[in-house]
Image 1 (cartoon, rainbow, N blue to C red):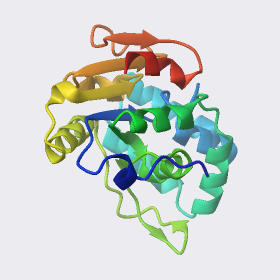
Image 2 (image 1 turned 60 degrees about the vertical axis):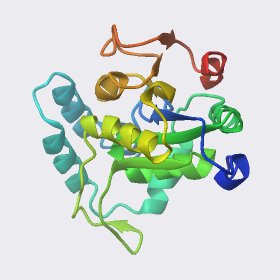
Image 3 (image 1 turned 180 degrees about the vertical axis):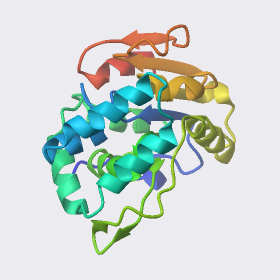
Length: 221
C-alpha cells in the first residue's frame, strides 16, 4: 500500500490548510465505487436503476442507501477491497496526496458512499481522515444492519469541523469534487476545484479540470 507522510512528521503544530476530496467520480474515474462493486458481483443493473432515480430526484438518498445496503448483506469486506483495487481511478492520486501534505495540507476524504470504500483509499493513498456512510461488519462480513448515512450537507459540516479543529478560517480550505453530492461543501470552501464535473457544480467552482491525471490540481494549490 502507498502511504502519505505521517502527520506528526509533517507539521508539529498544525496544518496550514485543509483539502477535502470527494471519492466517486473524483478519485474514481467514470464509475462510482458502489456501482463498480455491484458490477463485480454481476448485479450492476440493480444499482444503476437506483442511482438514476436518485440523480433525477425521484428517490432520496436514505431510500437508495437502505436498499443498496440490504442488497450487500453477506458480502465479505476482503472481497470488496479486492474489487476496489481494480476500479478505474485517476492517475497520480498518491503523488497528489503526498505533495499536498508536504505543502502543509491536511488531506481528508468524504463520500456519500460507504466509509469502507473511503477507508480503502485512505490505506492505499495516505489520506489523513475519511468519512462516509457506515454499516455493521461482523467477522469481516456486512450484516446489512445499523447503517448510518452520511448526507450531502454533512460534507460541509465535516469541512467546518476540520477548520475549527485546526483553528483555520474557511478561506484556508479547499474542496475537490465532481457532482451533486459536492454542492453544499462547494458553497462554503474557500477554494473549489471541480474534476470532470457533470454540471451539478456549475457556477460554484474556481477551477475546472478535465482528464485522468489528478496531479493537474497541484498547480492551483
